Structure formats: C-alpha cells, structure tokens
Amino acid sequence: MSELDKERRERFLEDVKNTQIIITCTDKLELKNENKKIYFVENRKCKIKDLIFI
Image (cartoon, rainbow, N blue to C red):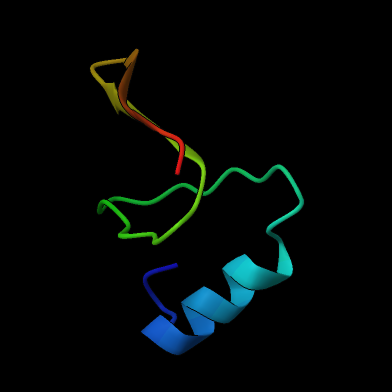
C-alpha cells in the first residue's frame, strides 16, 4: 500500500470493499470509513491493537 498514492489507495480499497483481504505493512494505514481489525506482530506475538467498526 505504501507505494500507492492516496487516490490509488482509496480506489483499490473501494474495489475490494466487499471482500475479505489481508494487507501487511510496516506503517499504520489511515483508512476512512472502513471496518477493520489491526493486528500488531512483535517478537513473534500477535496482538489486536485496534478493533474499529464504523
């Protein structure tokens, strides 16, 4: 996702909005009006950091 500019990122997310997807990244993505779960993996341990349903 980081290689996409904001417009392309939003277009991509619009195209897959009714699909379950997994996006991996090293930076937190700012996603507007999206149902999302954010997991952080550190030292081989996974934690749910944010659970947001808008």
